[in-house]
Image (cartoon, rainbow, N blue to C red; front, side):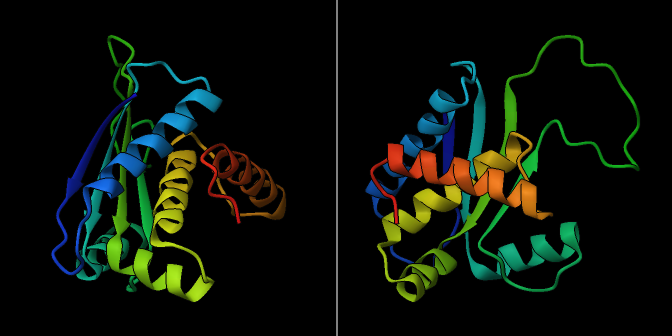
Length: 156
């Protein structure tokens, strides 16, 4: 997997180990979901203000959230139809709020590393079409998250 980790946030201390962990989490999803080795994903780490604005603009929710996924293959109703001449292995972008990572790790009683890996896995699954809108989808997605986190040795 080709992973670009872009740390744009300034509110929290950044450790290079976080970047390595994001790579591990993306690679685990790639392995388990049998993604092409040249599949690409961008993981952007942002401040609360930035993710709040993205959440407002793209989801209509004016609040800070922990993770957003923007899939390259997602089609919005107002986009024009066009043909892609060749297969594109760019899955999309995952945007993670580091302030939420730290707050939720404390709230849930686990490490920031576990929370960051979980949000990365969660975002990757969204890029692959998983969702949690209804109970059956939520159950399937949760099962995949648990399997992937176990593979990372970061289960609950």
